[in-house]
Length: 90
Picture 1 (cartoon, rainbow, N blue to C red):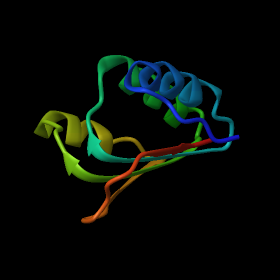
Picture 2: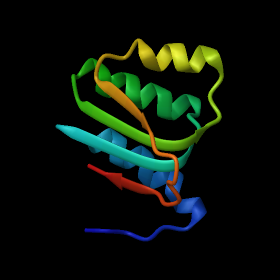
Picture 3: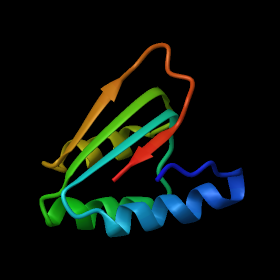
């Protein structure tokens, strides 16, 4: 079921969505920023071989974070020039 979230609820539900993903996870967001907790959860899902797709328009990642993400075999990152909405799908 779709949920419309305000800013304060987004982080909570994003963490829950990542934690509960069993087969696939799709994260679509204009801005790609990963805090330490989100990185930890994504690493865990990568270890469990969960298919993760991330689509973004603008990345605020540092070069070290980009290298970190490239080392994760089950995360695929795509760029979308005209992206203006967020959608998180489990």
